[in-house]
Length: 616
Image (tube, rainbow, N blue to C red; front, side):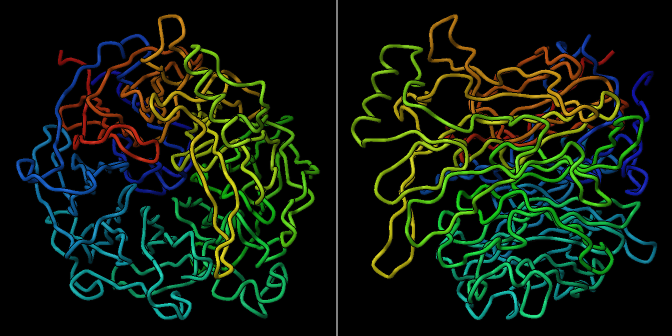
């Protein structure tokens, strides 16, 4: 096929042993940039995309069930014309990536499920065949033969390792421990974080561990909360570290395969809105930690939020960048948290490339809390989502919306907030960004040809108040700042955005609203919508993204931000898409579209939707 491939600037593609037309990990390759070198689809022809095939994940669509409707946010893998997919029906399947025909399916034991966001792929080593490796929601690490779907021989017991070991469970065997994201594969290691409880505060440890992909044996552990005698243990005052849960990598991590460095983006400690029982800076919470990928040895860290009492986390996968600044080439890494602050760091040293200012922030009104007096704010780029709210900023797109939102404020005597304002216990505040960001788990993509980091963010506020229970545990009341009947938001627009940042200057290259509000009258629909699921970019100059709760799947010109193509789906696609080359030489774009997710969009779909240009 003429013009199908363009060689990208090298990050991690060569180290992954992947073909340019494959998609071998959530981030396309270990560097996490979600950049495909395929060029068949361009800004000039993307409007001609049509459905190629659809795979329905529900194996028993005629069986009526009660309870929660299964939904998915997963991103498939594509290797050598095989598409691998974890489904919300407890199955992992392999499909022919060109036709959609199912090759094999493997059912997890009992009620267990594959992780929410994708799978890992190990290419084999000559003595052992390629494997699909993933953690389950019930804490199992599972390896399957990529060719047959059978449990991998020699890996744990019948292809399964129970990772809920005593040291990880912190003496609390009934605490929750599982996996929501795929492992990253480095050499013969599967490196993976975990999903732990957000409350109560005592629970399983959030340590990151590496497992041998051949045997399933533990290779190394990195303690997310330093133990007594370990460096930085003093950042936890008194005994606040003991049995503390949280401080976990619940999302994807990233690997610089050339340098052998793994980058671990940690979240907040539990409970993540109150820190009076774990005072201090609380390393390695909300920190990007660089470790030797072979051994787990600490190299450096950068903390993006001190003493997190907002659940801001480092909630997006880090992305390797190549920055050219002041005539110098800098190997860099980008990482964001839910506050929509984008930190661009030297990935060898951890130093901010555009500078960071420790900025004074408000103290906590809760007597037993000691908020950090400052927070790090990058000098560049600017914050990529709303970070405050004043009571004169109520949406007025329709009289009905304005009245509903004003009534919500008046009924509960709500007040606005400024950036990094701690949550009070005597009344509720309207906090931006709320618990869904800013950016959500999907994060951004990097186009090395254009030098642009492209990311979707939400202007999504929460109404929150701290509440102390009778047993002394702190919790909160929390609700979206919207008209619940219409799902229209209560602050002025935009409500969701797609932004491109020039990584060489730190400036915004372009920014556009992402999504429309169909309920609004003509001329007012272009509000932007909250999104869950991120973009991918291609050497052909096209950015693909679903994510929004308006049931659209879109393509943008990566250089300008112009919307080039949109199609309406039966259900919203709250997942990150992939693009790949089929055995017929055509470029395909695939995305899971089931609705649901944190955005509470209508659920009920079970489709993997695949698009391509018409056959010649």
